[in-house]
Length: 215
Image (tube, rainbow, N blue to C red; front, side):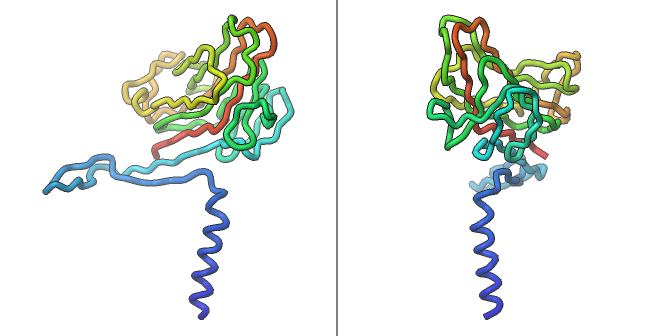
């Protein structure tokens, strides 16, 4: 009887706490071989960690520079506030809102990037004839930055953007300090929003930032 109660208690705990865990790890062999019509896993044993910032619990009204943990990720935020208005573009109930210009920068360095993904949409584009964009950059020192994605005039609809970092790093990325970044290089990520020659308010929304790292 006690054993049944213990097992039931463990199951209840799993169901209560698992939905609130945003990061997860899984492992795999990095190669396969075909033998007797069966795919067999071989090679090196690899594992991946997924870090997520869903913004669902994100609360901030400070338009200045602050450091804040958003779910699994710690960011330096510059002019990034809670976007929970009906006009904000978001998955769920809350996202991030940037009016005119702002940046989101990881405070930690990561290595072995597999991918970086996030959603961006425009609540207001102001004068759509002007220039506005966002830029994704990486840095090995936190002061010199190298662009890996530039998106001009993102659309109003919340749109998923994914950067295949494993391919970029496999080929090597020449950084601003002339060093070459590979999968073993520790890197920060920064997403910059630029309103350009705005006529009227330009409001960017961002949601669900995900970093996948191989360890």
